[in-house]
Amino acid sequence: MKINPNFSCIGAILVSLMFAVPVLMAEDAPPAPAAAKPDFGDFTSQTLATKSWGALEAKKYDDLKAYVAKCRELYEAKAVEMQKSLTEPAAKEKANEYWALNDVGTCCFILAKSLDAQGKKVEAIAAYKEVADKFSFAQCWDPKGWFWKPAEAAKDRLKELEFETAK
Image (cartoon, rainbow, N blue to C red; front, side, top):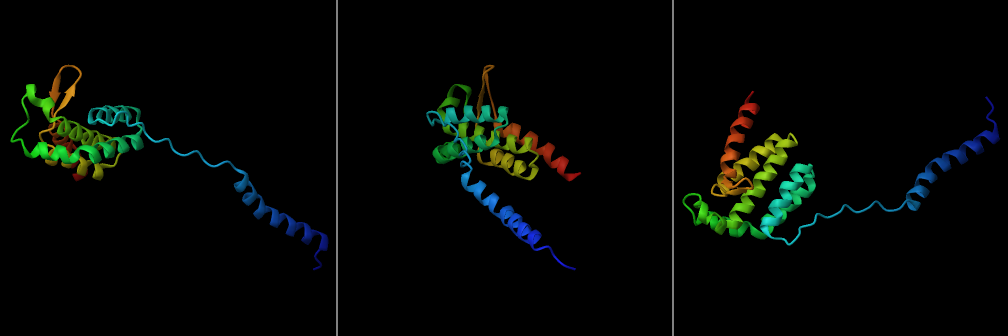
């Protein structure tokens, strides 16, 4: 069988172009935009907790993780100190004095809810357990006019998740 010499030259050129074009295109392509960093606002624990709730509602899970991580980085040591100083949740009139405990505990609860919403059951169980164990006296203000306890809500959801995963 005789190969047409013109065909093999054209074939070689096409093959070279096939490999060269993506390289040329990649060099000419504009860089991918950097992911926008979440806005931490004034960096207070209250702001970070509020932004965490907003990110959960908007299903912006990466931003939520960043808000929770920042809250923990800045305030977890104080939250743990506050937790250790209590033998029961603070009375309603004194609850705001435990701001770091309340906000860090709430942020960790929000993170657990986000993991739960994403179907990451094993991670959600671990996060709910942490809220229940490490931040058991945290309280969260409901805009309707009362405090609720993230640890109690975490324990309730833990029972459901453990039952679901036992099936």
